[in-house]
Image 1 (tube, rainbow, N blue to C red):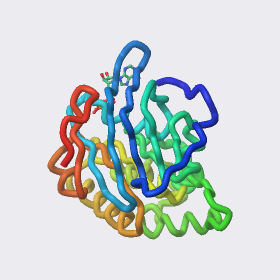
Image 2: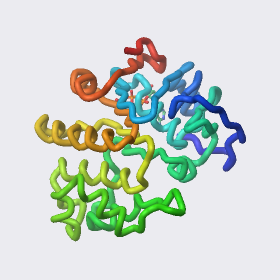
Image 3: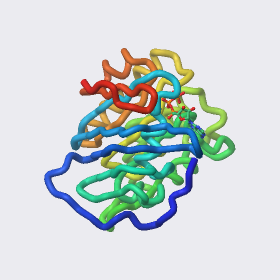
Length: 235
Ligand code: ATP
């Protein structure tokens, strides 16, 4: 993982853009090339899948978008603004939330405490913390019942719900979801995709990384296929 070298992305803006435009990105981990000339676009309120085999570069693409990995070359535009080079907290501030692979919850903290970490009042007119908790809990009645329970004592499916809920606490315009299905029973994954569908219907765009191609295609509007760090097909 590389560290962003600068706090400020180039000040530039464009109009008539898709919500997200990733343009010709190359990214490396030390000497290891993870992405070669990756370009993808997502429109407002679109639900797009990113599929490919192990090591194809799916996670790296999400990390580059959310500022965890800084691309070596290429540009990333979001809402008409250039965002490559911004650190992750500034990218969240622009309206992109990331559910990382493996969820990365605080196991000893309660459901509610975990959700507080996702709160990020992007706009001055944004809801209060308790208002955002209520808004997000609407999607997850089971989490509402368990709000005082330690995250580590939840079932795998509930933990994944909590991961999605935490990402939604910043009221993102784009939600990045890495391996929603990881280690979960198909019926639970279906429930989670249903929730993502409800979120998407409120106008939030979603980019879903998924190893199970059929599941990804059944639950999105279109897809990109990555192979060895390159986009080899777009549906
Ligand atoms: P998976 O489904 O296994 O997570 P992926 O499609 O998400 O695969 P990436 O994790 O993005 O693929 O990996 C792309 C390439 O970068 C692979 O060759 C991988 O070995 C390499 N890579 C990923 N993370 C690191 C890291 N932290 N250090 C070095 N190389 C890495």
